[in-house]
Image (cartoon, rainbow, N blue to C red; front, side, top):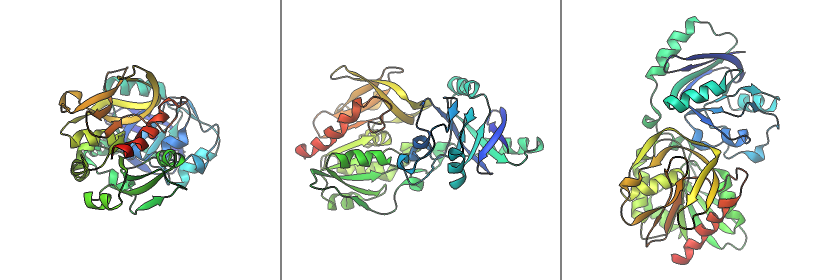
Length: 354
């Protein structure tokens, strides 16, 4: 099959198609992870985005549903240098997601690093004529910026889901903005009952579950769009312990009056060095975000707990007095090191400060 990837600046890549025969629009991003293509594709934080893998060979160890981070593929499209094996192709067909291979992903990665993330169109079909390119380019230019799209409602649970564990040590209400399943597994493995609720669950409803702590999950898009969630978090401050991961870190910061900004090309990969400012230990972390907290806007009662050693961006915050902390990276993702898994134990310990 033919495939074409068209960027908003007019750059056109022709390659070979796989997955579904269709056209999609989204924000083109890259991730530097060397494994985990199934986890990447099923991560709800990639909703609205076309994901490019910088590692050149994808599909070589198959696909298992046990590796899913959600109920299916959430990325809008997939870009690789070379596809091997049939299972990854079949996965994209099953979830109606187009893919393109046999293009220069190294050149494209360097382009994004220089110019930043871009809007794009990915089309896969039996034959794509040159005459179609101009029309698709005009549609790319008119496509909404990711900051203008409400993505969290597309990936949050619609129902309350109770994840039970024998002899629970604590109860967590998980505000689901697009949670990765391994976050829930990590809590369950530590004897923590998890009540997974929709992103727009009210302050009163959350407290009715009598949580030992509230966890604000990861998720896609611009955190500043989630004004209702920010208001609910603000109401929870000082009432119940609060923690967050990735998008949750940004939403907690916004609830305290801080601000966020869109990064040039974000942090997406499994090799981001993060420093704990209290212990001065450095951890290699997995990350997937395109927005960051502006340190200069944080109030005096919040302090930065972790920083990124590549660009000095905020990787975690904690309150000086209240039982509140959050991190920008993904402690559940285990990109090789398991160093930051201890943060789930720290979350459960919040109940002792309830």
